[in-house]
Length: 179
Image (cartoon, rainbow, N blue to C red):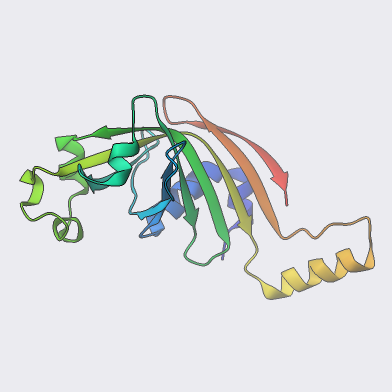
């Protein structure tokens, strides 16, 4: 169940925790005219950068040009947390990050392991994000809907929406809005 207090008080850490909990989200390059595709995120919390293993001969790598921007969509495992992260994306074959995030799952995709000539990474430097955290409680949800239906001037309070902006050092400022 999504923690609404955390969404209000510390949305950046909650976002990072949700990214760490998922196996894949949807990544798309702005202006590329290609559909978003599932990619497995590797989060560097210090730099607010999401790393993705990929191959040099993929459509998404070909879509990344200097200065390109991308979006990465996150749906929490409990389906009560959603986020859209945006920022600059670049192709980087960073040996330090390859070593840091390498696993047997990643190795299964590359015949020659870390030395595979087609191995590369994408780095999405987070500039901003929108999050939506909602209650997982059917009782609270039902209560809020009933209250709103009885009072036309009241909207149901079933979650939190927040917009986060990141500086280049990875810290976040945010504005909170109730959903």
